[in-house]
Image (cartoon, rainbow, N blue to C red; front, top):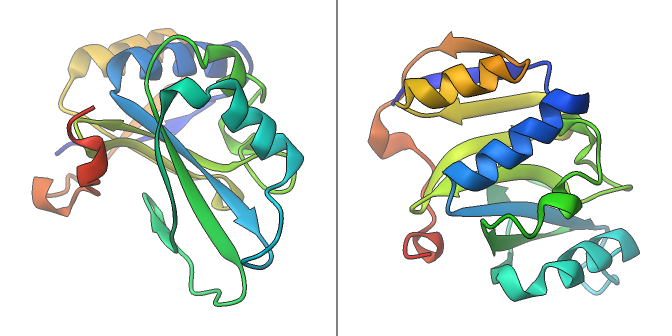
Length: 169
């Protein structure tokens, strides 16, 4: 699978990015961070997920999601997965940049999936992302929207992050 790094994903370019990725993907996810298992979900995350609750596929406590493995045994991370649809456009545009998806102001690490496989992964606090696609048209569209797309080392398809709960969305 071809692998790319996406730069300049803020402002109007970020707004277009979200629109394009919702169209190209079948699901997306964000992660909630809590300092302990019994802590209340932060208000901003609760409001986010309630606004698009009809699109919720599942949520689960985890220490692993695309691009991230946490070895922190004290904290709790919960992945929220949603069906891709134009409806959450406003919620995904509540930030002005890909790297604003970070605690404490927002959920963590916006990711997009296609048929269960990760299409785009990000880790905001590391300012890291990866786009996995063979679709040259998608690369051109993102570039035309103002992003700088840099080709990186290809990865074998079997190494792509896969979530079987998102495969049949």
